[in-house]
Length: 133
Image (cartoon, rainbow, N blue to C red):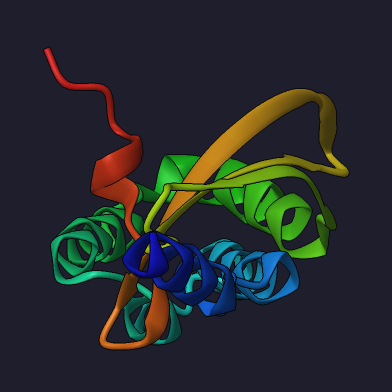
């Protein structure tokens, strides 16, 4: 009985993840991508996501001149967007957070981003949000 009480007490003393903290990291990560600051985004991402960011960086540099005007307009919209965060859920261990958010440019479209705690630091994990077949 004493062991059970101690286990419950220990579990309740564990620090719970901060919703505000993970949403701040998510906002910084999403903003970095919108501003095409892939180096900053990589600092806020897991190793697997780094590979995806490298591909995004490569593709963004390959836009043909005929589409450059449209891309510039889309980039301006993305840079000016504001993000609203909704429900944040944590796994039981408090090492993974799933965050719902929307953009001021498309408030009706709710999106999801997953963050994982790696070496005491919250990092975006785009691979976790990709459905597998």
